[in-house]
Length: 311
Image (cartoon, rainbow, N blue to C red):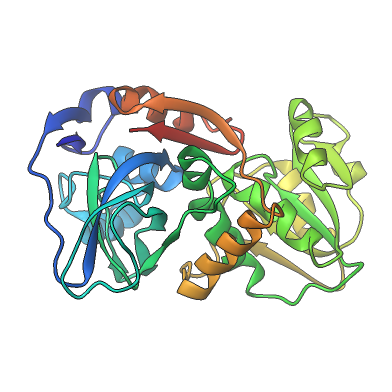
């Protein structure tokens, strides 16, 4: 099968190579998925580049491999069809259209979706693809959706709560706008002006252009401020937003704690997506052969929603 191999850590065009590798064979409790779409996430780019402070680099390489990735095929998101099933599989059948996220916990994860095929256990974050979505759309849901749910799992959102989403136009942010709207919250989005129409269409009640000189003066008092871009990216506006809280308000970053990706959260995303309440946002779609270009685009930090790979 064809797969993108990460030969070592470094620049995308130097280390990401399309190669022929052996097709995996499913174990008794696994299914073999013929992948039609995957996605390039900010986490993929961070691991591939490894341009990090020394201590953080050591911790990440301890998990993923020193000098080069222990598993050279990246990617944890996929959507495709069931090609083969193990002898103990009873939840899926040949030809089923599925989507998946290859992580159940920080210690229970599986990479390998930058390829034509992948094997996953039937009990993992794996389900029938939302019927109303293409493979590309389904592949745009799990990463941003699960991380947004992780942030919101720390709080109880009630009708009328005022929420600020910092970094509202990215893969996490576009999901983070929609989830609290279903609870009746009032959402303000921080993004660039060119994305105002997009975030408004997703349910944002107010927008703030982070590039404007008076952006900090447009802040109000919020019950929750959610940072969807992480602590490595900061700005004067973000520092002001951390203090733009009501008396009992809370500031929560996507980098707070280790993200949990339980099966019930994954299935909730499917239900919301299938009901039309969680439309994914896709910025660009690249073929598998242009993985380096896709990584380079994501690395610039200005993508809108998700970048998807059509396999």
